[in-house]
Each structure stands twice: as structure tokens, then as C-alpha cells.
Amino acid sequence: MSKARRTKLMATLGPATMSESVISNMVKIGVDAFRVNFSHGDYAEVNELLKSFRNATKDLRAAPPLIADLQGPTVRLGDFAQFDVDLKKTYEISTNGEIPVLEPVFYEMIEEGDTIAIDGGRLWGRVVAKSGQKALVQFLNEGVVGPRKTIAIQGKEYPFTIPTEKDLKDMEFALKNGFDGLALSFVKEGKDIERVKDIAYELGKPFIISKIETISAVNNIREIADKTDYVLVARGDLGSHYPLVKIPELERTIIEESLNMGKPSIVATQLLDSMTTNPIPTRAEVTDVFMAVSMGADALMVSGETAVGRYPVEVVKWLRDIAEEAEGYIRVRPRARGLDVYDKFSQSIVELSETIGATIVAITTTGKTPQRLAKFRPSSRIVAVCSESWVCKKLCLTWGVEVAQLEHTGYDQVVIDGLKELNMISSNERIVMTRSLKQGVTDAIRIYEV
Image 1 (cartoon, rainbow, N blue to C red):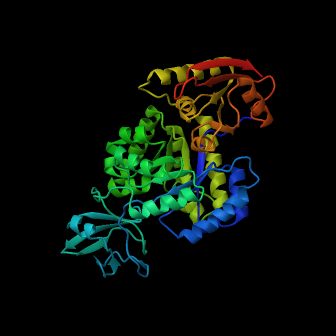
Image 2 (cartoon, helix red, strand yellow):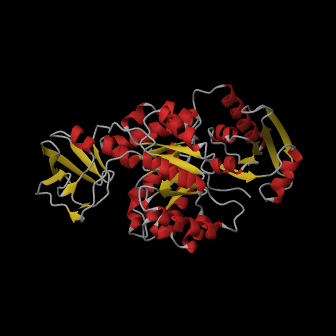
Image 3 (spheres, rainbow, N blue to C red):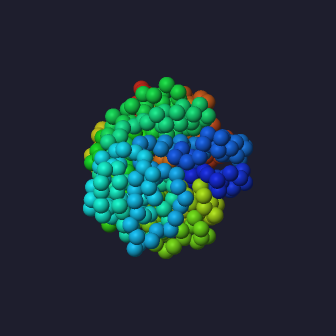
């Protein structure tokens, strides 16, 4: 009846997950949402993924939500034959050099002495000379330089805004093809989210994930959390802007601020990176995932591990098992600070449910009440009941929230009967039911013995 795991899992679809059986197995093991990265591939490839996804999930009562990860404004390398780095050599970055970069803004911002990060920090280099639209770089670590990879300048931000023209096209394609959420790249402030919402809401009701991957986003975290539905700790691009030793501190800060604001957080980038080519994670990766859960993350996201890796199903299994182990270990749950009156009302519901050993049933029209309840990490189950699909999809990545879509939610007994039919509550179970008597406000509590 209850779900042992409260932390949610998001996996990325890609060439390694084209098979219906692979997607089906990932769902059975525990994937709560799927992401498609619109930085790679074309619409024909996305349509193939969508076909496999829909066939794999057609018999489910509710398919996991699909999230379109928009590329956002970024500078990427051009097209060239990839090569292995020689640490003794210097390489020319120019519009037609050994490493081509076509964006003029890169040359406007780069200076001698700067450190560059390629492919989210997989490769680091030092600029040893700069002249016009040409820079000479000596790499600091070994690796492969490949086409279309991102290139960032540590400590500097490109002066771009979102959404880009590509984002607009991808957003329209995604929302017309059944995607449920949008992940926004390179968000800097709350106004970025508002611009996207104004456009997206004309096409549907997607939930918004704001990726924190710039210096501005870190500085404006509270403003961003207030405007978005989810906050994502994008450790890859954060590592291109900050010293790597700062990333754990930033991760903890972003999770805590999101929790305080009542907005779910997602931790991403290289969680089980070695499993792209190996069937078992490293000890350090296991510890990393464990710590993300213990910090209070609502969800964990893997990208290349399932999109292009050899062992996508095994990745999900390990992610699930580590999350369950971490949840069992945590002795003191994170408690949010800075509570308003509605937070305190939700906190009282949590305390009541724990005192009497009850399941919380939250009837919601916007998804806000279940997210407020999850903010306090109750030991009680949280069952969110909604009549509209977009609300249910929005809640699928919120910590500990089990979602039920019912056509009729106006009467308590109808809700109880509906949940019993779905096997989400059982006879003799005690429940604390909460619902809004007016839009956006939780103001009714009832206790039932089923």
C-alpha cells in the first residue's frame, strides 16, 4: 500500500533507451519522470523516443511525466573531428581553428589568464594568449575534445537571456507533443521564468524546473524559487563557474533555500557517471547520492548514464536502492524555516497525522498543499488527490507524494471510495483529509477511519 521510497527519480531518455522494454523496466524499478534533452538530436529522434515511451507506458494507470530540457543560451564548440588532448601542446580556439568557436561574445569576454571549462568541466584549460578572435589554450587535464560541447569561462557569465529562438521552437514542439514539464537552462532571475510562463501557458500548463547553473542564479535563488515549481541543482555548469571544492556547499545551500521556500529540489550531474560504461557505481558515487538524499533533495536526476550509457536499467536500480538506504538512515528530518500562516497550518496537519498514525490525503487544485506538506518531510504518507492531469504530473517529483487522479473530488466519501478502488488506502486505515474551501488556501481538516 505504501511506498517505501520517498525520494523521486528522474531518468533521461536517449539512444540507450529507444527500446520499449528498457523504458518499461525503468518504470517498474522506480522512475518517476523522464527527461528529454533538447540540446541533442532532432525532432525525428524525439518522436522515436516518444513512440517507444508511449508504447511502454500505455497500460499504466498514469504514465510518468515527460520533461523537455531546453538548451537555453550557451556557447558550444563547432563541428570538428574529436581528438585526445596532449598536455604539452597549446591549441588554437578561433572561428576556424583546431577548436572552433563561432560565437563572437566568447572572444569579447575571454582574456589571457582565464580558465575555460569544456563539456561541463570534464576538460579544463588555461588561456595563455589572446588576440582578437583567437585564443591559445593549454589544457590542464587529459581527455577528449569533441564537437558541440559547451565551453564556459570560469567566473564569467555570457550576457544572454532566455528563452532563445531555439527554446521557443522546442517549447512549442514539446507542448504540442504531450510533454508535461519544461526545464529551463541558464536561468538568472525570476523574470526569466515569467517570460517563459507567459509563452508556455498559451500552449498548455507545463510545470517549470529552473536549473541553477549560473552565478546570478545562485545569488537570486530565493527569487527564482518563488517563481518556479522545481529547483534543479545543475552541478555540471555550476562547476564551470565556481571552484569544484565549492560545489558541495552550493548544493547544500540551494537545497536548504528551496526547502525553506517550499519548492522541491532536484540534484543532477554525474550522480552515477561511471555507470555510463560500468555496471556498478564507485564508492564515491554511492556516497554522493546518499548525501544528496540526506541533505533533503526531493529528487535525483541521471542524464548520460541512461541516455547513452550501457546499463540504463541498472543505473535506475542503484539510484533507487541508494535512496532507500539513505532514507532509512536519516534520524532527523530537515525542517523548513521562515514559515507563513499556511506553512504553519500544513505543519499542524503533519504533526496531527504523525500523532495518530494516519495517512494524509490532500485534495488539491493547484498542487500547492501537497508541496507544503512535503516541506516538513512527514513520516506519514502523503496522498495527493487531483482531478486534472496537469496537477498530478506536477507533483510526481515532489518528495513522498503519491498521486491519484479522480474525476470527482467534491465529496470526502467519494474521494475515499475512489482511493480504495485504486488500492491507495485500505479498510480500517486512518486518514487526515485536507482540502481547500476556497482557491489556493488550505483550510479544512477532517479525520476518518476508512
